[in-house]
Length: 167
Image (cartoon, rainbow, N blue to C red; front, side, top):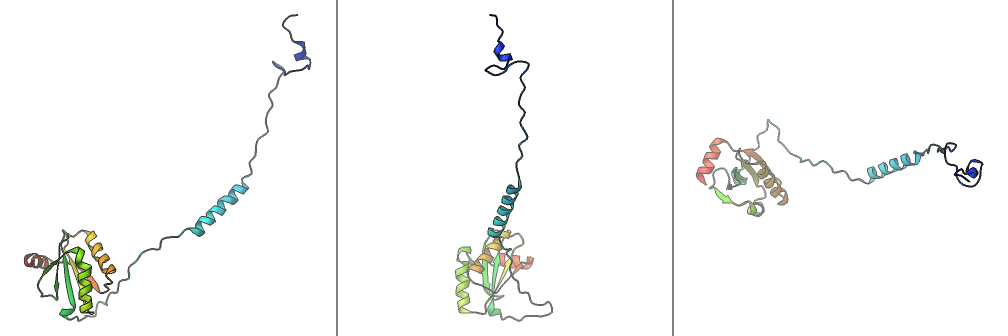
């Protein structure tokens, strides 16, 4: 017979095709988020407890009161002058002869002087044009050399002329 399939329209075997077929609709899928929230808070607490926070680094400075004059013997003063280009000269006392020193030998030289005179106070004077890293490097040498008595100051114009002219 012709091209008409009666079994498909009368509930016979096979899938229905054509106008009478309906697409099945799925119900909405619901995901319960409660366990995910629990896991998120658990991870948050874990990382908060196990993380090591870096402590702020601070340096303690002992400053004398403004109204007190501290008398220091000239033989106990070590003057170190640092130029803007990193060149360094030193003198013992305020009127001693100027001598050049290399940065690499600074810690050893200061350690020797401290062993000879335990009351030694180091006064470091920087030229105004000196980059900041030289002050940090000198301070690091003091900390590594266990030098505890030191002061920093800026050179005056007279000191710059005296030190550069005398070196």
